[in-house]
Length: 205
Image (cartoon, rainbow, N blue to C red; front, side, top):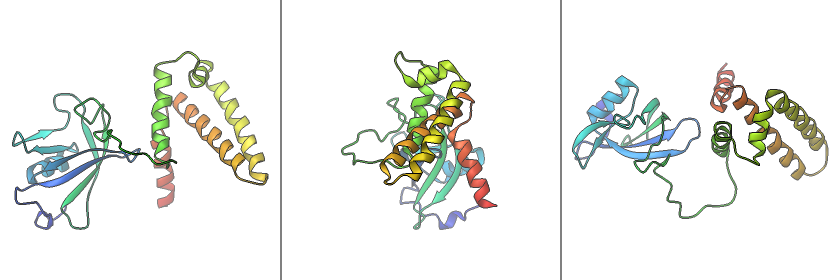
């Protein structure tokens, strides 16, 4: 366990705490912890914070049910800020938004691998709430045989694209394959996080 004497609580006895979605990498919220909140977080495995306005401890989701299961606790280099990697149930923000950081001022072009988690959520929504005219909903309606067939077709097209000159076709076919893979995984009840965990386990071997 971390030596409490090395953690730099401020003059109010608080430390900044950031909650990050372990699967997507999205930053969900920022709050504060005192020594007791940090202890309870470690002991229970669920995020506890200290409210500066109410001047009391609180467990995230205690009344709403939107709890945060803590998977890791990491301190920054100065040990005056703590990062919690969590599994978020429901919304992290009191407004009902998934993340408190939704007031985006500017968005640059392009996307990183974190977009896969967002795409996975959209695919899950199409599974739970079929939409007329949605190709994703159509695939789920047809079932695993149709989805698996599309996976095979996209895999062949990707191989062909890889053998051609240029990369634009390769990028497009890769996107098609990954999309259909996510649909197939959702149809079988497998999450992208489970696949990533398997990759991580293999990397550690």
